[in-house]
Image 1 (cartoon, rainbow over the protein chains, first blue to last red):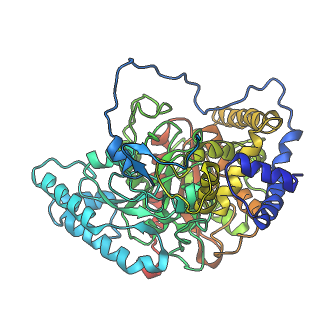
Image 2 (cartoon, rainbow over the protein chains, first blue to last red):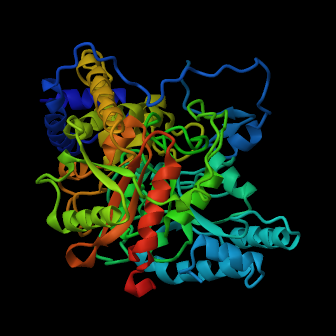
Image 3 (cartoon, helix red, strand yellow):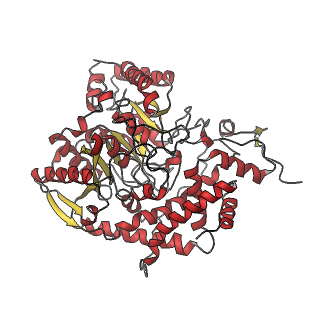
Length: 94
Length: 485
């Protein structure tokens, strides 16, 4: 069972602000979901390799050449705040 | 005109009985009339669509038409289309105008198809009822009190109400097949790796696959022929030739071995759904197909496994929405961390937050082995079940959903029950197989029922031909909801 403290910790890790009432509701829902998920624990998976991907393929390699063009202005046109080609965020270094 | 199949529309365009501008205007008019009641579209831009339609008409006049040239197609609002708002059904992307095209959009563009608009969806494709959209729920054209299914609910409703000749969708856990079932249209999720995911906003990258919704298997064969194709920008897109999907449709089902999993017809399946499914399988037998009982013994674990793996991948994929490079940014923050937290708190809806927290938990230190790795091991067991079943059959058939469409609001308070309803579709995503849903009758309250057809890897052609054979002998696919016929 997840505690309220754990919910707040997870929200912090996920960079989500949660109100106290949201956290309470979330705890209840997550505990319901994990009660359903816990049926996995009864399954014997000894010797079964984890499957991370549906196809057994290796990553393709390509020539180490430039393929992208500079589209900074276009991409920054959809940003919340930019100046002189830079993304603006609150001050992080004193 | 709106009841025409793609092949019929294509013939009329080629014969110059009608122009692409006329066809596009017809569907835009239908959207303008019906969308207030259905909420199937988030964005419509008549000017842009009609400009593309005139270009298509010029192409037809020059004798350079391809099968889909001039045909308007609606796109689920998670395919980036340059210059079009691409919201993903979320406030966090409410005003995001895509600066580039998804591969799927490029493919339609090269084929001369017209973008008819962007369809409503559950936020970031997370949901099974289309009630999780920031832009409000989509309504089912068969009964506007009912949900259309999700997450491609807008695309399904648009095709069912004849507001679009065809529409794209994506299917991570059933998001094409289940809404197709709920709205009485045909839906196709190709094999994982058949269609490029480039420019398709990511939810769970090892499960997401682009596909389509249309009136018939023949329409879907035409659309898949356009969508499929190698694209190096998606590292999981497979470099293998596509089949002749349209040319292979007429091969028939004589001798086709249909696997029917014994686990499918349990207490979880409502009788009003089970009966039309069994009748449909009976029709296949009549046409000379052979029914084989198969077993999928780990099928009941698919939903638990999915609700570990999909949120884990989502929590990672959605980390990019932080209010810095694109999308919504909250106001009134104190520092960078506060900006992230407030932006995400205000930008995401409750279902998305729930899944981000689940994913964060199962990937965190001390829980990774017990949840994430355990789920990946069981995923392999589920995929093996299918490999074994396909040793005895060519396709697998059963229901796409355990019930018909339910009323809006009926399941919102019980998210676990809504998750469990995806028991028939999710296993296919975990294995990476292709699947379809085609209309095969009606259940309670006259709401549609879909037959699910699952194919082996990259065997879309056989799956489509099986669906086509059924549609040659029945007319469920031709029924349109009374108010929109």
